[in-house]
Length: 125
Image (cartoon, rainbow, N blue to C red; front, side, top):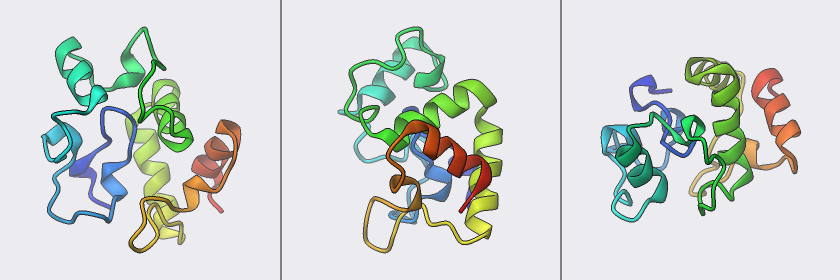
């Protein structure tokens, strides 16, 4: 886990992403898609640390349409970013996988509800 990458404006967990080892994380302007990313541009414009701080959250946004991403953002809104990263780090240490090899999905994408994902974050597998 690389805590310096943190969490993206939308709630993606850059800190445990294994897809791009040279990326420094969304909020460090590392994402190659930042020019078209609604979360990146809107949060920068509004001076927010993430979508979870916005009074319009969750809004119409293709990233927030993803159950894992929206649930991570809601988790941060309720418990804070450090609490999410602590849980993700503990879960990674215990064998949970954020991205399966060559895929953009992992163990956190298996649950079908926000409640199930939140339980997975807090309790692991």
